[in-house]
Image (cartoon, rainbow, N blue to C red; front, side, top):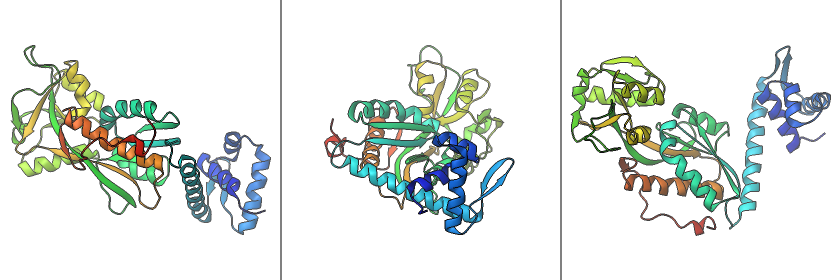
Length: 329
């Protein structure tokens, strides 16, 4: 028996599910047939690929190496097929983009709207994830593009800075005189946060790490009453007046419009964090990926220009790209 694409798919399914029976169900083949297929693969390769137990199957050291090669071959085949299908026409197939919730609040509605209108043959999947998981999800090929606040030069990823977004102080809703959905007129010095009770994400969260760096720069000890790793809960706590929090503006734009919270700019220093767009460095981009990258860039610029995403563009573009170059409208 020669090792073919079907063999690779079967093997990846067995390792991913951790069970020959579950893999057989997903692949819609009989379990005995899949077990026989595995035995023939191991015989041809001359190594044991999976260890079997009452709990299921686990890849051996050789199996782990074969798994990495299998995924790489299958991914390159997928890219090749999609690239040929697309040609010079509109993007087709599917593309998955992973991003933290705070970025998704700003980008997702417009990305989904534009993809549906322009590229009906392209299936867009938005995956809500934490910024720390983006590199592993790209390497594991569960997403094609990622949005993150962290740049890891040793990760094998290609990063492109999008925007330096502003972080703002969030508190209870303002009095009736304030305009809906905007900042209060006053600013607060970062050093003054020492006297303000705060609820922040835990120290493992990238946002908390950014805030702590600015606190160190301002030589201020933050008064953190509790760690809360949930944006909706932080917004609710701030709205109830139990404490203030620090979030990006897109995270609270809806709550501001609904007058559930207020936002105040921080100064001296003004805290910002960089949003990066990233993908695997050693995988050629399909036209779908190129089109989505262009759309993300132009959408980000729109949001910044309209004041919906306060910050500074890192990768400004002079005008919204013509979709004719990457798709038919």
